[in-house]
Length: 91
Image (cartoon, rainbow, N blue to C red; front, side):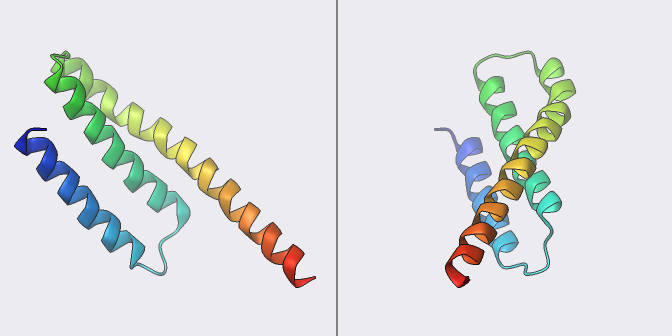
């Protein structure tokens, strides 16, 4: 793994730590930040593999948006499942 990817991964860990310590962060914002991190990682991975940088730049925001939708739905489902388990155990 090259220095750029290691630096990116370290920065992503720092961002995730900051997000986890933010009590009022809504799910949509959290999902969008996660999606941006993953889209950036995908961008650099594809760039290292010799991908078309201009095409990757055009697609990175679309990728982030799609990932955010998927992550947002996953997180909402996860929260609903937690609530259902909590309700079932308290009733």
